[in-house]
Length: 291
Length: 193
Image 1 (tube, rainbow over the protein chains, first blue to last red):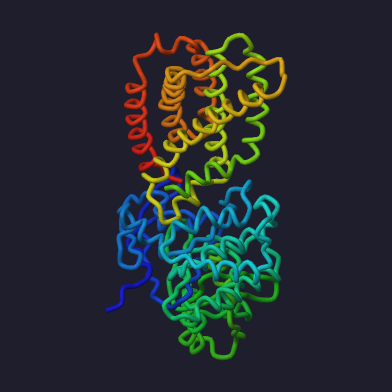
Image 2: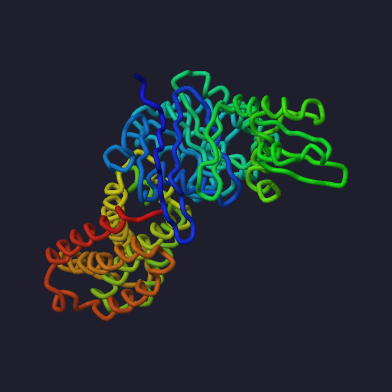
């Protein structure tokens, strides 16, 4: 049996007032998993735990079947993954080429030809200092490095936040190309869920350090629906289907689960729409206060 | 690990130029104090290079980068401890260069000859100070370790010129440096970023 690329089980971590409360999810080889949640939900903390940048209090994380908390494994794992952080982590005084020269010898499968190709493709000037690059260019540099050592898993923490829509689209295009090789996978944290509407296969959603769901994206659209209709539709029996609800002068709007069953209950009294991931995230986090 | 030492040298490309200027200032300020001038110049240059390497790591959020690369935390710490010797060698080179220039050009400066003891005493000072500074840097980061830094710098000035009498010897200092490395490693292995 092929090991999952990333397996997180019952992951726990306390950081002051904040807590990761027993997260579990699995990313299989060949897929893109979107990792979503509102700001402060614990996405960056989870990624830091995956990268072993902070120590877990409980549970386990396996990457390529290896326990990431063992230092010896960590080095092996990092040789096979590419990481893109939302913030700049490169030495600003160095040029793009110098940064590459520091990093390249550390990887066992570094490909100089691939790096040069990505520099060209991303229009990254090799001789320019990193501090002179725009935010978009810095993300592209991180991506060029991540893609030039034949990484099997890309881990990205909010890479697209702060990027303009054109660079974001370009970025997503590159990810789609990357995933063409079936052995590769992407774990992509973001709060810009429209990026994931386009490319993700799985969605893992966390809020306040707890898992809300981890599911194939297409199943979400089967399971959940946006509904609009009159207030009369609301009764104790129908109310339990609502994940989140907004009431206004003319009626109600909300996200329901178990779409088919709900449909039978209300017949044609409401309008059904396909929710965007943003709607799902919105109703799960803020909308629940109104049900 | 050599990549990281190379990085420590690359990040201070500009600083190496300032270092040249600083070497001239020190040579002028310490005229007449031959042995002390050598110690002051090599010690201060090495000190500034180490400080700038640590500052660059701090500013770049280097721990996130370094700990996502296929390199152990041990190698990260060890590279910094080894870099110190590269900085020391560069500082020696600066002194030799300046002494050469002063010999060739009719400058009103005097740079005394350097003895093996002088080099050993200076290295001992450099190693002792960084044996204390580096674990503090790894524990508290660059910003918060600066006060300790200042105290160490002032204390070292008191020891210039008489280091050989006041401290045991270079081997003791190197043993302390090795111990300091293990302390730093322990701190870094348990550090969260």
